[in-house]
Length: 141
Image (cartoon, rainbow, N blue to C red; front, top):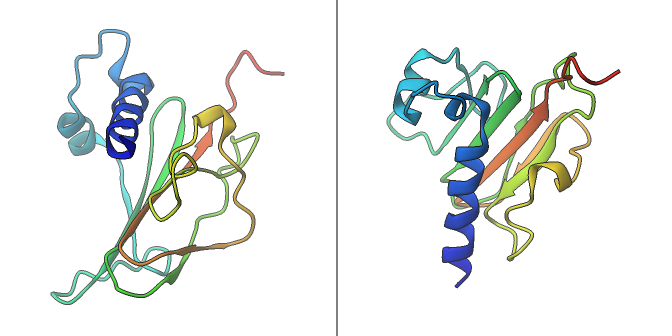
């Protein structure tokens, strides 16, 4: 039941992203091919592309905000540096997904996601974390 709930939320989250609405007609693969990704490892802008690497992170943006995805396939927790919150983000980074947490805290609604404090995020073993920073819209003061 927890896996079904998680995947259902993940699909809803993906379909709610601006790039997949409004007749843009892009698949996720097409979007990622066109996106400007910033690759990271446990240190910003320093991905480990080696054969034995167990970590990867990247930052990408769409019209509604910024996304920072962290993957820890290592068997121990690791601290990942996170980028400064984008200057056009009114609330900074918020944690939407952390697969190490128990349900229902593993996946939060974007509007209810808890803020992320500091410059590092500890990612538990074999976990995925998604941080989101919303872009200040023109409609906001």
